Length: 214
Image (cartoon, rainbow, N blue to C red; front, side, top):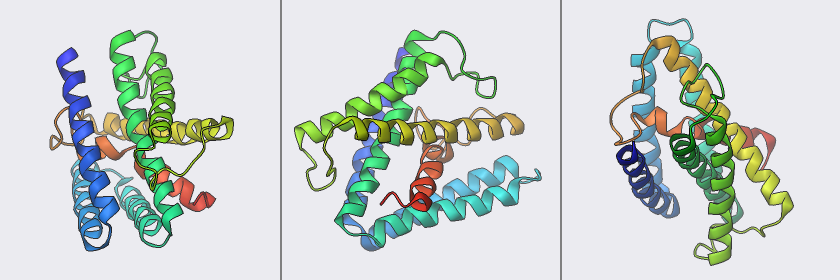
């Protein structure tokens, strides 16, 4: 169990660094990266649900979701980039915090839809998200990326983003359960498939886009 937690944490760190570099560079590199991720996610969804009646709905949602990611990154100014990284960090820290706390403390299950989700993981997801955003702001390591002041309003925003991310995780878990599979793929060590990794993001980015949070 400890080995799996360590593997997932290390791979998350590496993926985050690579993603940050590509997102900051933007332009053709970002567009190519986004296209590759979209293609893999679409392929995983196809293998998982091709014979299901919700296959087409999922395809349309993925197109919409990745479109909002593209628009937020390419059609906004520096503030938009700050929103992008803020969202990305919360989704990643939500995933890592939920996984680590859930595996360490275990406890009561959160929902039957996703048996691995626990209340400890729920709390860990929120706490880790708050901690990571606080550290990024406090250390000022990415002062051109995270342009916020840490206050009660920001904490509420973190809770909101983290909640959407966790709901996205549960929704994808529901479809995996319907398809009788554990992971959407095996491409990412400790995570499974690309959809396993971005399940929270593909729901959070459209939400903030259509609510105008950028």
